[in-house]
Amino acid sequence: EPPLLIPTPDARATADAVARASGRSVHEVTLVLGSGWSEVVVELADPGTAVTIPVSDLPGFVPPSAAGHRGTVTSCLVDGVPLLAVAGRSHLYEGLGTDPVVHPAHVAAAVGSGVLVLTNAAGGLRADLAVGDLVLISDHLNLTGRSPLTGPAFVDLVDAYSPRLRSAAADALQAVTGSRPAEGVYAAMPGPQYETPAEIRMLRTLGADLVGMSTVPETVAARGLGLEVVAASLVTNLAAGVTGQPLDHAEVLAAGAAGAERLTDALRALVPAVARG
Ligand code: 6GU
Image (cartoon, rainbow, N blue to C red; front, side, top):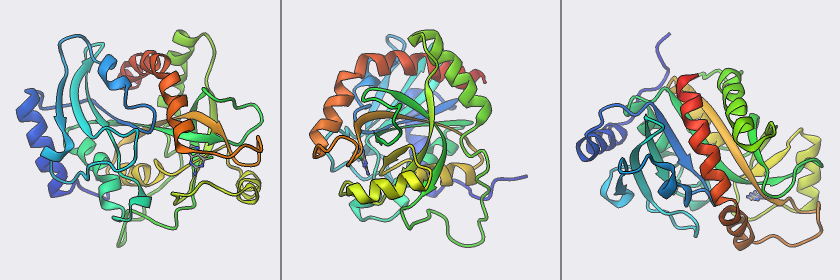
């Protein structure tokens, strides 16, 4: 069946600009780097293969406002696989609607990616999750109150996070870290405030293992565009009420920075694994 969505004109123009700058007409995988993950883009590329474009030079992106988001698009090879890495996503809490949020998913389709890898920083809700854990997302709860879709785009979300590629990703991560990553259900909240302890109890009751403010609109759009999705959360803190400690954005970024080398190793293994299925 043909995809329900086609890439926007801005995404096609971005893909043309990326092809001109990089000389690469196809990027097998597109990777979106969330809070705390942006530093890895520097070390991720095979040496000498990276071409970086600021998002301010590309249509459809909104330069990031939150600290910890850098605002670049990088074309490179990772273990020989052509990758487009987007650092600095837009969030619903910026108030510009879903279009800039899902632009990287549209760009992924426009650059010929079959796979979209989404990364984020999340609060851990499940007792076995610790700060610094990398968790593969198995399913989501869309609690944003928003959809990136309008009209009769009845996108199926069963197995939205590809079980096949998730298992390939888990194998690759196990090979580099020595242990199999946890999997969990990600609840997307509109933000930008963190949750109350009562909201965290509610989210647990609803079946959430992770909580954050991204990833879900991108996944919905990506499935509509016919992409396979793999998503990973870095647990940057335990959610409100788990520790009794107040949360702040600096803590979330610090956990990302502390994990940067590990995250680079993880993505250098994961990207080729999901590209090759
Ligand atoms: Cl605890 N909540 C939300 N909404 N986003 C987060 C988070 C918590 N930790 C990292 N990002």
